[in-house]
Length: 178
Image 1 (tube, helix red, strand yellow):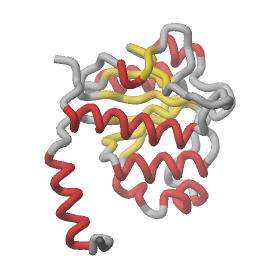
Image 2 (tube, one colour):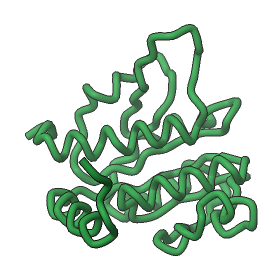
Image 3 (cartoon, helix red, strand yellow):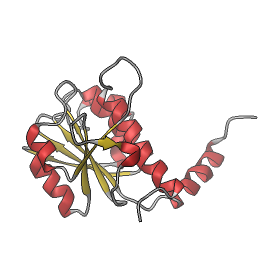
Image 4 (cartoon, rainbow, N blue to C red):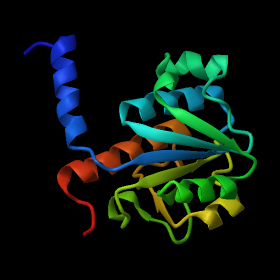
């Protein structure tokens, strides 16, 4: 076994891209850390996220600190800024996305049980406080990532990565609801 070279990697990724027809976007509700935003941007570029809706005090992907962590991948994404999360959620819906909050909330479902169409905007909240109450109320549905350990929550960039993978995995395995 050997690692794939650049040409073989491109072929492999092209094959997975052909299997991916759903659209994914992210709403970052006051995700303030540029390092978290940079990490989210890099993962978002890897999973072909279409757009970032930035709300509140969310760090810009174009800031020097975020761009350093994103390692130049911010050039593959577009983004827009909104004063409040509900405005960003409305814009995402106008663009054809269902807005799914990723939050530990009383009516949240495990992300692998999420019933939603192929065009999803994941809403992720502030590192310490999660989604604002107004943004949470603006979501069409809410999901959470089941955890087994003694830690109560995940880093927002890690949670975003897991959720983006789960959305694509469900699409690739044909697990989307009819």
